[in-house]
Length: 274
Ligand SMILES: C[S@@+](CC[C@H](N)C(=O)[O-])C[C@H]1O[C@@H](n2cnc3c(N)ncnc32)[C@H](O)[C@@H]1O
Image (cartoon, rainbow, N blue to C red; front, side, top):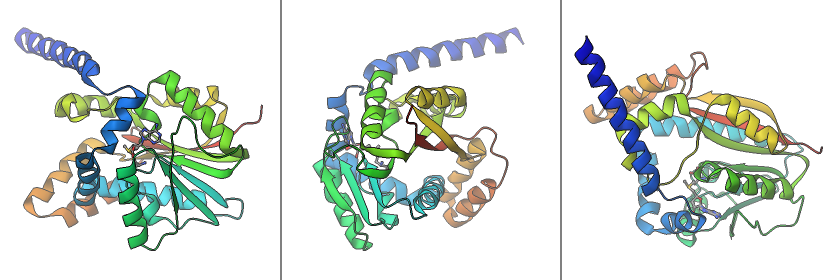
């Protein structure tokens, strides 16, 4: 009993220490993050990995569905996908009257062009920096940005929120994703932090809501995705037995369970005017 406890404490000490060590090794600066994502090898792995993993593909389809629903309705006419990467999401969405996908990386944009054209989606692809979005104020009705804002530390996230607010019309909508620290941190400890080379802010639900409120966004919907992540991640292994279809089916089924402690949140907000 005492030996087990000691062993656990020893393991905890080492995983915490490696998390600290890892923080020093992660890409955190705005420039390093830009360079990292423009690497052709990163563009390629990003694209390929999404296509094969059952857990990744269900997460992806849930995100696409959330965005599709948010884009419905006559008031959403001008949409910005901020930092689309290889257009993982926008290549599956029909832009309304105006759809702009803006990324800093020329290599990501090249892939995004290929993907959107292959699917006949008429997004305007623009190169630009999220810290200085090259559009005038109130240009968009909806901005969505996944796996981007959380790559930066708080002062930088605040600057990005400020830019998003600037280009949104009054009452405009904003969607982002966030990782639940209660689920993602233990998972990353087990997998090894070296698999996560770029800074990634993990949130508790109340922290996320508070951060958005402080940046003058009113949260109107927060939806948990990957609702039974530990089990879903284990089911993902069925792909090694060539049972990806079954894995996907079961992972999808678990998305119908209660949204208590998911690994990911999709958040829909509205720009506040006061
Ligand atoms: C993890 S990818 C996310 C891609 C996509 N949103 C998705 O969910 O699949 C992050 C993207 O942010 C882009 N990026 C990094 N820094 C940027 C900046 N300062 N301005 C605009 N885009 C940036 C990268 O080029 C990369 O395409």
